[in-house]
Length: 177
Image 1 (cartoon, helix red, strand yellow):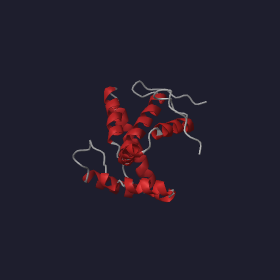
Image 2: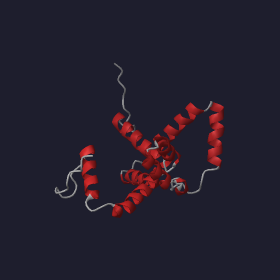
Image 3: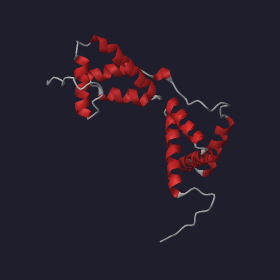
Image 4: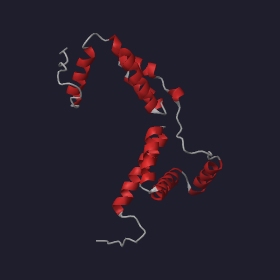
């Protein structure tokens, strides 16, 4: 059994694991262009005064990624090039609303075209915009449903997914098809 001595200024092992998870959350939000999740995670870090630990872990994760992707001499060149072209303002994540094709997604779902659905989702840098567009499409379709149909759809979704009852318990069960 190996026993390690924890130094006074070191983080306990549990705190390191928690910080790694937070750093990963921050990186995922940045990578997927989710500004809301990115800002929320940053706010939590600032509130708890753990910016230094999170920054250290983000650098460690980046160093591991560079180490695994490149030979040492190439990795240094890549990092120097990144440092030279770093943006002045790094507070915003990279989002691309223009690549979101909700109409194509709705058509593919309607046609049962799984390949196209996967391709649209994979090609969308920021899936939060795709989800937002899909919600907008659903909201536009709801008034076209016959009276009571939306409630039946909600009841069916609750039945399938075991969701909470939500609104009043008087929602009818979905029709059997």
